[in-house]
Image (cartoon, rainbow, N blue to C red; front, side, top):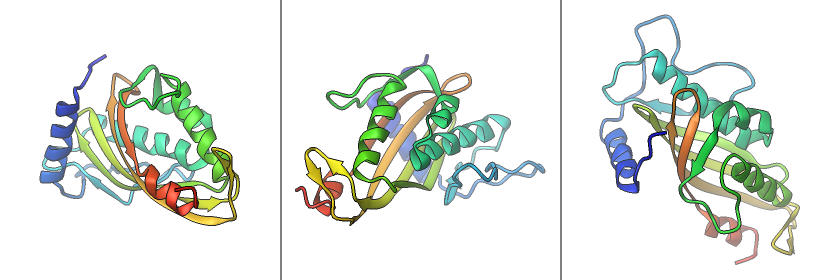
Length: 187
């Protein structure tokens, strides 16, 4: 498994952002998988890189991963994430590996049962992708001992994911937890 340092990951974001353009392809195969069950990215940016079968694979894995976050259905996570998956920004108390996203999704869905995940922007740089996400719903459940009163929730997140041979094998992520806590009336 190829490990990326935080500096390498940030360089990948910078490269992606500095060479932003809508990903297109001259072949008949679309870049984004239009399967009805997968979330569709708002934009896909590949810079000046050619669109290859690998690019399409990376986009499909991103769609599959964020369909998990959109639905809470772990079958999508299993298809997107390698069993050797490593969370490089693992919060305290969360299990490492694929069990970590399952635990995080369960915690958020206990607080916000109607949680959705919008894949607003997707930036592809080789075997790495960066996603800008928007989570929405209503705080009708419980979180850290607090019970919601249907407060509207909308907060952002940024993910950096590395794709190994066939699935995502490493990630770095940052969620706007403070906004969530403020909107929920907890902070």
